[in-house]
Length: 598
Image (tube, rainbow, N blue to C red; front, side, top):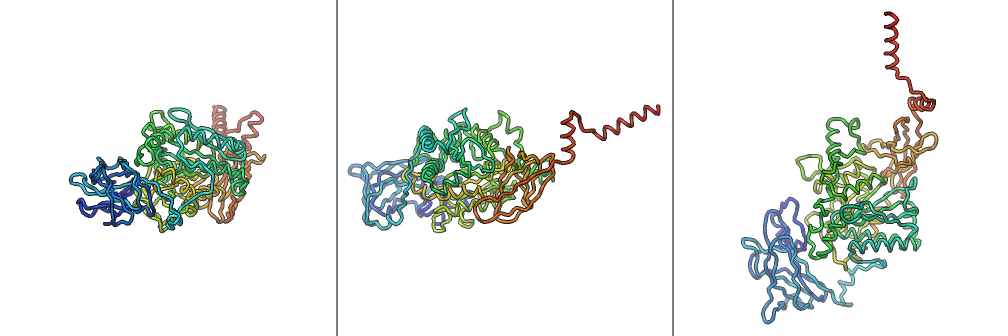
């Protein structure tokens, strides 16, 4: 039946959010009797070693298998049941829906096919289960199917799962290999494990005027470990290729200040790591040590902006950018993770232009807004003023991923993102208040996207080389997008950079600001734009800036002259005088005339 097929039988398979289809969340048998089975074809001889099972993922229904038999075959016709002495072995199944249960075979069995034959299930429930088969493929040079689909990599990288200590050691190794282009630093040093980042740049440790800043973050959910490992692989790759003088990588590193934060929630990761890739579950390690979901722990600035727009108080009371963080959020009593506060301080300190936060459990790139504007809806397309830019950024990653836009691939769970070529507006998928993407867009200059890099949150170590090949080109291409649009400096008549100057693009209701040295970067799609620079005490300046299709941002500099009032104040201050206040002078003259008449 629809939604109950074998493809729904994967461990960690998730039902649809709304569960519109009554039959979903697992493989379920058509009838409840002892003759039902689900079969896996390994495509080649395999040494089967164990089975992991789960119940049905559902908010409304309780279905799981409590015991089962295991059978193997070489031709899918003649079957051998796993024995326990002289009798068929009965394996103990699940006692609830979500916790995975591992059963190892008493002796490994070599075969091509394996069947699970349920023997008992929850009273008043149905035969429904999700499962994962453990085993090792045996060498078979004549197996055409395997040779055709086998993914290998030529990159000499450390393909393994790294716990916290091993991650730190790997960072140190990369730093020692490439000391001239790398720097290790941490953005949090209290309450739990430190958050370590690696900077990769031709001048690590300093912001260079005119050079954009980029970041990758992973592991906000500690059990979504693929992103973490991909970023550790990316660090190694950039270092090795820079030393090998790969022109593309050398240009990227020399022209960009790259920051990589591979584990935003290291405490959560350690919990997932202890359980391992097969038994971690969907939520173990998801939250911080304080029990907070970092993914939606940022201040909700969307509501502040939209309420101000409805009252027509934009930009008078609330600007369309750099929206201030509410006072309540800054208080010590607010339910805000230390990791969240650390990331906010990090993003306020460094003028990031573009960023990607890597997540897991799906294969799609989500762009803001992540929060719906209509309060009564859970899904609603809610675009930013920069929707066309965000769509391009999302597509740049998705289209260069090996599988994300492949119409032939099976969907991860119930969502099919092919209609938008592997991308989705976050709010049209599921609403999230206080997401990093929305906060980043409304409080800083940074355009942030969520990149879901794989269906499996915690893939087996043996799958990491293939996942690296799937994502390597996308990771590089997405970084290169930081050089699209316009860039420049805003200076005063003496050539000094003006910090916090506002850069506006005609027709786009979202401004950005210059960094402390007066430099700025504005991501834009190809086209011609009327761009205005303004700053307090200066006369605004507007010019047309053309963005081409070739890689590389268009230089668009501004020189602002001081307003007459600002110049008068500057002169008066220089000579130790204050500008005359005309209203106060009139009152003084009136008082003098009254005294003279009196």
